[in-house]
Length: 178
Image (tube, rainbow, N blue to C red):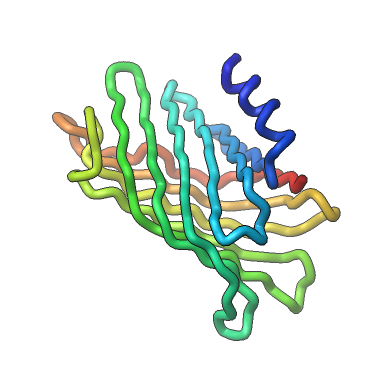
């Protein structure tokens, strides 16, 4: 209930809201600052069918650049992840970044990726680090909505257990721009 209230109140000041679905998980991400900002912030929630809950908060410095003659937005910064599953929980802070490449030959099409890695020294409770990879392609259907398809992989070390893949799935989604 608190998540619904927070989401509803945040969307009124959000720059964009992304909702993703796979056969085993559902996620929501909120970006409060406009894309023109030099700071990129994001908060998100991912629920996996096995009562796994992942929360994350991002803070990146971002800027515009050109890579292989393609306009790009890149960011470098931090992602804090909170993991909760039955008797296992933890928090971990990671470093990483993202890149979003626009494809000029196909107006509205972009490809994006992000990678964040947390060492065990920045992990607490049952976590001993994580790797979070997200690859996606977006297509702007109308001025304020994108369709997206992607792949998300989250892997973590858990104390007193073997390493575990927390999430590994292809997903589809919608991104709403405000």
